[in-house]
Image 1 (cartoon, rainbow, N blue to C red):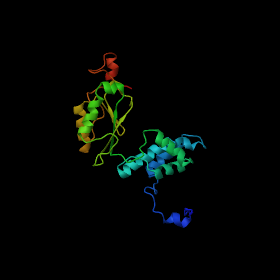
Image 2 (cartoon, rainbow, N blue to C red; image 1 turned 45 degrees about the horizontal axis):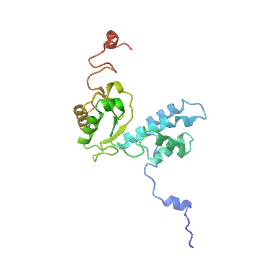
Image 3 (cartoon, rainbow, N blue to C red; image 1 turned 180 degrees about the horizontal axis):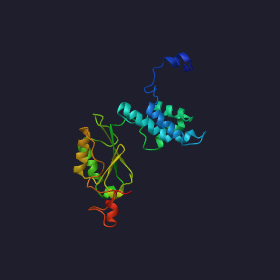
Image 4 (tube, one colour; image 1 turned 180 degrees about the vertical axis):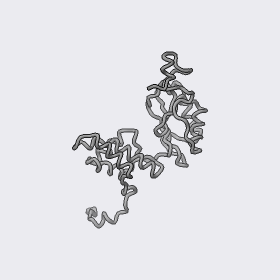
Amino acid sequence: MTTGTYNTTAEAKAARPPREFSDFAWTPESAEAAARAIALYPKGREASAVMPLLWIAQYQMGAATGSAWLPIPVIEFVAAQVGMPYMRAYEVATFYTMYNLKPVGRYLVQVCGTTPCQLRGSDDLLKACKDKGLVKGGNTADGLFTLSEVECLGACANAPMVQINDDNYEDLTYETMTALLEALARGETPKTGSAIGRKASCPEGGPTTLKEMATSDAR
């Protein structure tokens, strides 16, 4: 019987083509943000900063490539920054849905499908997305959009809502969701928050109590 062997010599490793993004390094801005995050923790506890560093790395990938995600070499880079085994950092990245492990579109559209949003019309928002060519779990052919249905995003009083990248858009309908996607496709920056003009989570039509406080600019 012939026994196969693996060539693990340094020469063989050197001959392998470099992995994409294996040259990932912090930009000056990211390095400063990473240093601030690590400084929040005691010496010897730098691994506690793995989550903010993964987030910073994902942002940097988005700025550099147009897709905010975390390739394996980037996760390895972050793990090395905090003295953590790669697999531990990978476990974090795979546990939290805030990290993207495959390329996403320029706009990550997360439609809340939890009960309050569902009762208020989240299915209409998903239909608006479908009618614009978005498919759950996939990217559009032009690379602009990725669609996912997610659990509660914490804006139940202003349901239905979506989170697109870091911004919330609330009190949406089929029509306003369609207009929102069209504006993004044109490169515009739509107004965030309530589509019907609510301030925070005031009832429709404006506050019914503490009206002076609600209209004041005082914090």
